[in-house]
Each structure stands twice: as C-alpha cells, then as structure tokens.
Image (tube, rainbow, N blue to C red; front, side):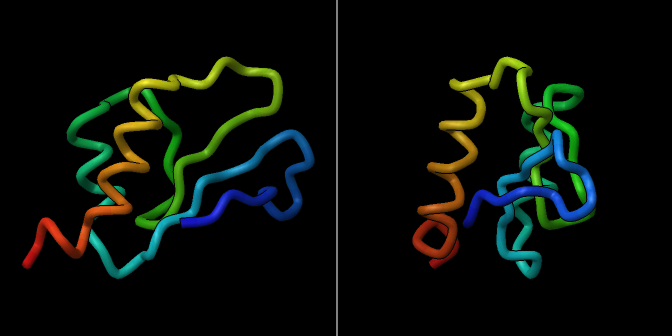
Length: 71
C-alpha cells in the first residue's frame, strides 16, 4: 500500500493497494458508499474532506494482513 497524489487532479490523493488482490472489492462490500474507488487499486480522497478514520484504519489493517489471512 502507498499513499500518493492522483495524477492530474491536484485536490485529490489516494491510498493505492496491490491490484491483483481482492482488497478493493472487499472494501466496497464492507463500506458501500463510504469511499470513492478507482478500479481495483485505490481508495480516493479529496483534500479538505474528513477521513473516515475508523473504516480507513480497518482497510489498512486488512491490507497488511491480506496474505496471512489467505494462507
């Protein structure tokens, strides 16, 4: 996972995840309507908006334990 600016959109940034996992689909199912998504690779955010901290923390935790949970 990495956090970076969204190319061509100066007021947006994203948390990018490995696109060959089911993480983004899992996030979509767990948190419908809470996040904006980019395909199967990113959660999108807008500068100045409040972050859904508890949900984001949970998503990051799922990403950090993804391979452990699958074994």
